[in-house]
Amino acid sequence: TTPQGEFLFHVFGALAQFERSLIQERVQAGLAAAARRGRRGGRPTAIDPEKLAAVTAALEGGATKAAVCRTFGIKRSTLIDSLARIGWSPAGSRREA
Image 1: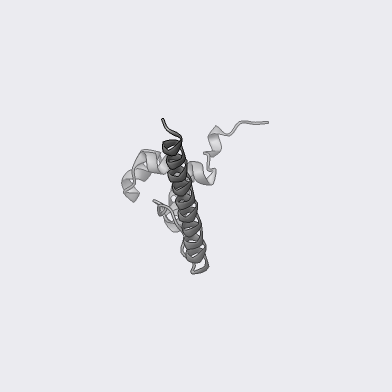
Image 2: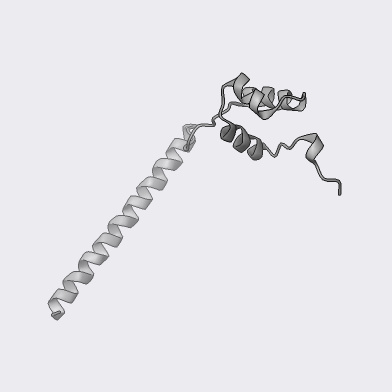
């Protein structure tokens, strides 16, 4: 409640903000260095592109999603998310414009 206490509070706040900025700088520099080395962050894809191509071929060939999940050993939610990511939709369910 004193002026000295208020000053000390502001100094500690400024130091914390400065440290946060330094941390952000170091993180961004680290991410840029990793990108230059060819590293990509994030979670790896659940289904690799070759497997996804085989899955879409099976679905276009008339297989059901349940059958595809059993055959390829993937969960239904993973299949649906992966198909949505590539924008795949069954030919029979497309709307005519």
